[in-house]
Image (cartoon, rainbow, N blue to C red; front, side, top):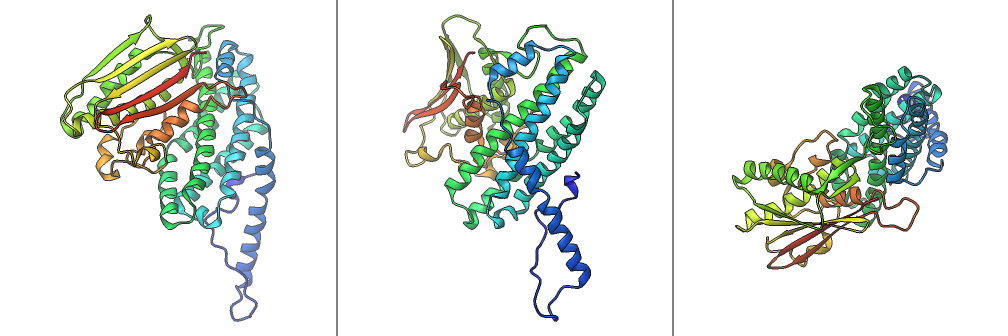
Length: 399
């Protein structure tokens, strides 16, 4: 089934007039009828894959698959990867198709929809002939999985643009958009991790650079909290220097023993810390605060907590309730472009000024929360003191 040939969502449908004077030429009638039939063909595969049960998304499952890495296991993981991606893609497409028709006609949103159609085509093609050898697994990695990762790498700015336009036109209200984006971004992050994890496992196997039984052979790495803080603080200070010709000092305090090590997705932490530092550093510079931003790291029991404390005068009480809302920003987009940056994990960092920094950070933190048990595996919260400063609390379960 070649999904790419099916009717794009942006196709213009015109009703067939009853009068001969307005009736479409027969050739056009046949064309639209054929397109309608092809579009209808989408319903069955989307419903099939969207209805497939997906396993709870555990970090421990990623670590377990890393520990099982072998030439035999990688083929099992390839099949699991395709099955999960088909399920997530079906769910994403169903969400798009349930949006109001005028919303999906928005060019930016339609482009995102068609990206998932292309993803579905790639995955269905791969599911017909699953990898049975190391060579065919590498073909999957270099072909479909790499294409899927690339297809979605530049999708978020377009989606953000589309929903900003939808809100401006009043086609959906803010709670509806928030619900769609929360569920969409959660599954988007899971899709990224599933695909990238198999790519990482395959690379470790091909290069023979893995440790049997280790949970760090894939996308999950052993993170050092203090090293990550210094790395991202330095990175944001480079952005601050370009924009403001300034530098913000950072004091790091560790409560308890060092080093503070825990398993996590490093580029997720890079994104979250970068967003927190951008906010706190900017508040210090713009309010001419000379004291350092203070970062406290505490490892207690089964959790690691990081507090970022600034003295940037705090957040306006009238705005604090909107801080985690999509498209809300205290900085104009045009004024924030020099704070945009590029990272290898994708383009989620390119939505600077669009109000996605903190909401997406929270999505990254909470992606492992819906894992089928009652544990809170990650949280991100703010406590602000108007006229004084703001504390940001990042809490991650140390599995």
